[in-house]
Length: 260
Image 1 (cartoon, rainbow, N blue to C red):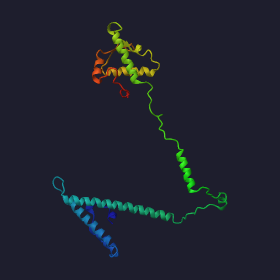
Image 2 (image 1 turned 180 degrees about the vertical axis):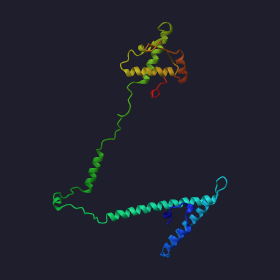
Image 3 (image 1 turned 90 degrees about the horizontal axis):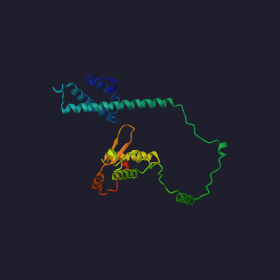
Image 4 (image 1 turned 180 degrees about the horizontal axis):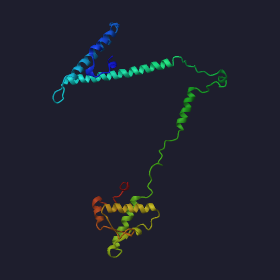
């Protein structure tokens, strides 16, 4: 009845809704339908309280007391119940329409024609449950061992740590020899450093090692211009710093994680 009025809360005429309800309950058996009458009283009390809270003015700051807020919360819950009621009512009407539409249909019992059934041989069991258990045990016993495939794992094409050691050792040897003259004394060009590389990936690995050594402050470089030779020189004392840091001057602190 409330849904049929479709009015604002402050415009709802409680007297008209009450008259509609009284006309409805006159035909009810109160001995059996007392719950419906109690539900109406609950809804009516919520509407009266919520309408009063909506009509009463708020304070200067627009705040309402706790009782008014509680009434408005009850109003929201009531409206939510009305929306659920409307959804269930629409669903019931849809079910009723579908049942009416399909009222004249009857299911056809499925069966196999005798001509087709005679073509199928009778199932004859030749094994006992114990035979089936032994077959299952044999299959499980002969199952292949579980193996984890490693084909999807990344296999490095070049040992970055070994290439880093090679770069360091050659630059240290060049520094010890003091080869070259002037600014190039004790240096080694990148062309010379990669002259024995068999693949391009080795060249890339040595260049990455150079970048990491430069980042660590263990290497200096000089290039006169674009596309000119890159001269590399190991920093004197870098080995002493590495030894003091990790206690092992024969190793490098470079791993594959540095190139990730």
